Image (cartoon, rainbow, N blue to C red; front, top):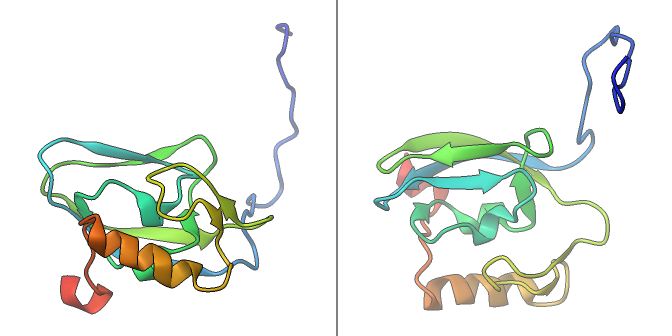
Length: 130
């Protein structure tokens, strides 16, 4: 045994995460000229403005992937990603400053969508990308 090593029994069934939370699939197109990597718990609504997708559907969501991992978008890529709703207090601060508060506060969603348009973040309705 090594210092800090964990000895874990093999699970008899698959590990399930994010059960019971809202999820959605989005088509994301990368229109920029440099690779973009998005971490597992980044508020997807606020990712790089060169990623074009339906930001309204992504509001309050993060990638539905294991913690500590990421998804990489190469220039010109389009891919379908799976998102899951944030849990807990649903407070978002930082990132690109489009929310900076409670996701569920009155008018916050519309205020954030207005900021997306004003700051020229890539946004198109899901049906327009297919």
